[in-house]
Image (tube, rainbow, N blue to C red):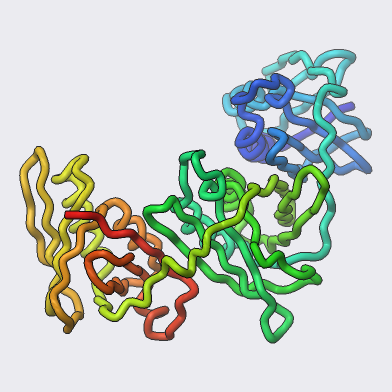
Length: 378
């Protein structure tokens, strides 16, 4: 069995595969990935038992077959090779790699030890524009928790409901208990089936892979695969499919956290972010920054081991004065995902959650995409 790849194509595929087969596992076989040729088509498959990735890879081949290769080691070898063609040839118990004057022979693992993973070739589900889905998931996922105390907080909650047309409104939410982000998208309904009223929780790792590796021009089909022992979400693009085990648990009622703010301050996003960044540098690990909202002005004030600072940021506001304590990092991250030059910061009082959204969405009364930050005691 002989395979010929373009070096850049092979390198790009290996970089994706190594996001799963990265060697950080107690099962040595999972550090390898499966190269398979079936009906003349080449594919790479890697799994960590929770997440599985399959890539369709362009290659010239002379026969069907399959073998395993160490992912990380193969990546490092291919990185150092010049542009051009790279040949992989399966011998009796090794893989011969050739590229120009370079030749190597790598031992192969027993293919029977590799987990038998089944990836359904889905044709129905929710169909997304790739760039829109990647942007929404990428923005929301950074608000998920990195702690395992509450597993349901370690992923992105996804739910959907059908619209009036042949479409569905999809809501994505992530929170770590201190801040929350929510995004809404319209997807095409391709016989998706009835949604689970409790929604689905997708691991942050799978979301990051999806946002990173699916091409901008792809259409992404999302579907669910229900099994007795493990329910999975499937994301299928033109040349890549990712399956991931859903996180068990019920997501909290996030709608109760979003405040019906009666004081709305319009501010230049970049100016506010710059002020908060300076505040975070000054207060170091004190975490709390004092924000005073008054007529057409936001005063940002903090102090720490380095000293103290006070900064005024112009805004549009004509309400009563409100003083709030915030974590500047969290508020900055919420502002960073606003897809507009101006953000609207919505507050009720010093003890209530703070809502952040774009001025465009606020004016259109579109509260589907926003974020929330909890206040802190001063």
